[in-house]
Image (tube, helix red, strand yellow):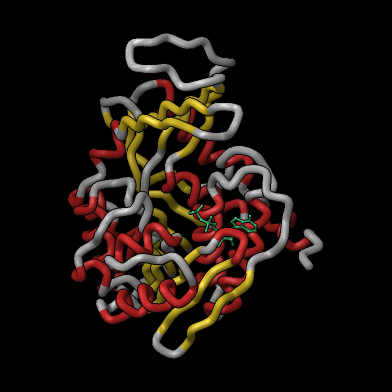
Length: 301
Ligand code: ADP
């Protein structure tokens, strides 16, 4: 089983011709409601790959909260540890221009109430998992407590350090697999990351801080796997990229599914590259997350 701790948001998306200036009003297209949040995206991604997945998180008692829960259930995620609080659900207000540029305002709402005590209440869901999967859209105190509980019980910890922020060594040294993109790797290591040599150097800095393994995602180039005895670029798959939204989420979820099945890391990264590649061939976040069948049937070269 994979236990995910993280955020649930309702993404509200409007297409516009150009961004409004301060004080200006612009007319846009129809409003789309799309379930999102990194925690929910990764839970759904893992469940679509036939992972056995439970999510720990919070939504509001508003109408969005019910829609977010229903969407998880529909995708086969165990939501018995998703609590409804008497506040608003997390929401992201997103405007997108024809060139694909976006502006996003997030209201964390119920996600900001995911604290260490709440995580403690669900310690059994953490301790009984093979893999604990986390991101950084919920308060850091909750992330820390969950990681401590997992390590006490010998559960493998995968942290997707997004959105980017620097992290204390006391957390980094408990992470088994860290999955940054290049921007996140640079912020975590404190050094620039512009080329493969710098990816390697920055990954080594994190290994010295105690992280067991760093898997840096490199877009269409694939991912760089760095552990004390493996340093290898695992190449990506060539696909027609339509929209890269949720590629990082599906990649990390696929890695968790493969590792929970006992696959060695290089094989797990190869599988995650396939899943990430398929995700960029479709528009949107959760709608683009592939099913295991689609991954197995796709004619990857
Ligand atoms: P993020 O979206 O978090 O910045 P990346 O862009 O590095 O993450 O994408 C995550 C993973 O998705 C990559 O490691 C790769 O496996 C896959 N991927 C992303 N973009 C492409 C692409 N254009 N072609 C093929 N695979 C891709």
